[in-house]
Image 1 (tube, rainbow, N blue to C red):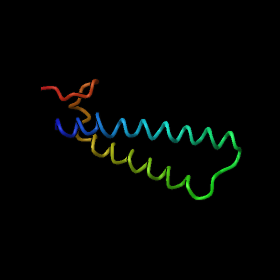
Image 2 (cartoon, rainbow, N blue to C red):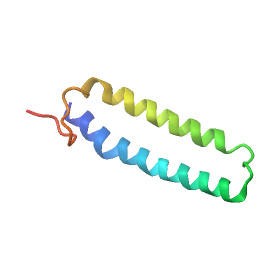
Image 3 (cartoon, rainbow, N blue to C red):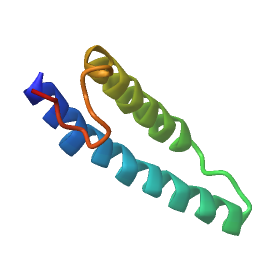
Length: 74
Protein backbone atom coordinates (compact mmCIF):
# COMPACT_ATOMS: atom_id res chain seq x y z
CA UNK A 1 0.00 0.00 0.00
CA UNK A 2 2.83 2.42 0.76
CA UNK A 3 4.40 1.85 -2.65
CA UNK A 4 1.09 2.52 -4.41
CA UNK A 5 0.53 5.62 -2.31
CA UNK A 6 4.03 6.88 -3.10
CA UNK A 7 3.52 6.17 -6.81
CA UNK A 8 0.27 8.10 -6.89
CA UNK A 9 1.46 10.96 -4.69
CA UNK A 10 4.95 11.53 -6.07
CA UNK A 11 4.75 10.35 -9.69
CA UNK A 12 1.28 10.23 -11.19
CA UNK A 13 -0.31 13.33 -9.64
CA UNK A 14 2.68 15.62 -10.43
CA UNK A 15 2.74 14.18 -13.94
CA UNK A 16 -0.93 15.05 -14.34
CA UNK A 17 -0.36 18.57 -13.00
CA UNK A 18 2.48 19.20 -15.46
CA UNK A 19 0.50 17.76 -18.35
CA UNK A 20 -2.52 19.87 -17.37
CA UNK A 21 -0.33 22.99 -17.46
CA UNK A 22 0.94 21.98 -20.89
CA UNK A 23 -2.60 21.49 -22.20
CA UNK A 24 -3.68 24.87 -20.80
CA UNK A 25 -0.69 26.56 -22.44
CA UNK A 26 -1.56 24.82 -25.68
CA UNK A 27 -5.18 25.97 -25.34
CA UNK A 28 -3.97 29.55 -24.82
CA UNK A 29 -1.83 29.25 -27.95
CA UNK A 30 -4.83 27.97 -29.92
CA UNK A 31 -7.00 30.82 -28.61
CA UNK A 32 -4.30 33.38 -29.45
CA UNK A 33 -3.85 32.08 -32.99
CA UNK A 34 -7.62 31.47 -33.44
CA UNK A 35 -7.07 28.27 -35.40
CA UNK A 36 -7.02 24.60 -34.49
CA UNK A 37 -3.92 22.50 -35.26
CA UNK A 38 -4.18 19.57 -37.63
CA UNK A 39 -3.88 16.10 -36.08
CA UNK A 40 -2.04 16.73 -32.81
CA UNK A 41 -4.74 17.79 -30.40
CA UNK A 42 -6.55 14.46 -30.26
CA UNK A 43 -3.46 12.46 -29.36
CA UNK A 44 -2.51 14.95 -26.64
CA UNK A 45 -5.94 14.79 -25.00
CA UNK A 46 -6.13 11.00 -25.38
CA UNK A 47 -2.76 10.64 -23.64
CA UNK A 48 -3.93 12.93 -20.85
CA UNK A 49 -7.13 10.93 -20.38
CA UNK A 50 -5.16 7.68 -20.36
CA UNK A 51 -2.90 8.94 -17.54
CA UNK A 52 -5.96 10.24 -15.64
CA UNK A 53 -7.73 6.89 -15.85
CA UNK A 54 -4.56 5.02 -14.87
CA UNK A 55 -4.13 7.28 -11.85
CA UNK A 56 -7.72 6.79 -10.76
CA UNK A 57 -7.51 3.01 -11.18
CA UNK A 58 -4.25 2.76 -9.25
CA UNK A 59 -5.48 5.06 -6.47
CA UNK A 60 -8.95 3.52 -6.16
CA UNK A 61 -8.07 0.70 -3.71
CA UNK A 62 -6.30 3.09 -1.33
CA UNK A 63 -8.86 5.89 -1.42
CA UNK A 64 -10.19 5.26 2.10
CA UNK A 65 -6.86 4.32 3.67
CA UNK A 66 -4.90 7.40 2.63
CA UNK A 67 -4.98 10.57 4.69
CA UNK A 68 -5.35 14.06 3.23
CA UNK A 69 -1.58 14.50 3.02
CA UNK A 70 -1.18 11.32 1.01
CA UNK A 71 0.50 9.06 3.56
CA UNK A 72 -0.90 5.72 4.64
CA UNK A 73 -1.75 5.73 8.36
CA UNK A 74 -0.24 2.97 10.49
